[in-house]
Image (spheres, rainbow, N blue to C red):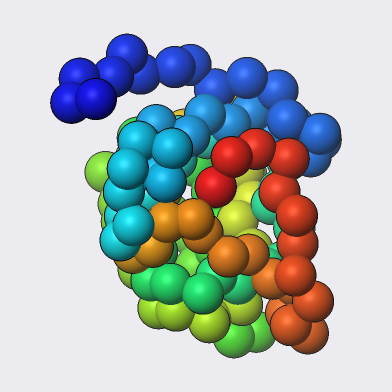
Length: 125
């Protein structure tokens, strides 16, 4: 499977979050995953961390990254760099949806609450 139709994000059980896994373990990858997400204005991811590095590319909208007790504002054309194990949370702060593309250094992507409890995500990782 070398060419895959990119799916539009569909609503997830996390309020205000739509998700599509574009590439990962189901496509034969073991060291990379790609997710596309849309966060509605005012929506947020839960506080979490991953067992691999993550890079988030902001395609459109405005947001805040909460990490290490700090708030970092970002918008279209910016990149978030999140090393493995770093607890973080992403908020959509603008009046338009926040469109992001997440690239992960592993597949499947392990996701955990800040205290280390594993999170079972409602989409394929």
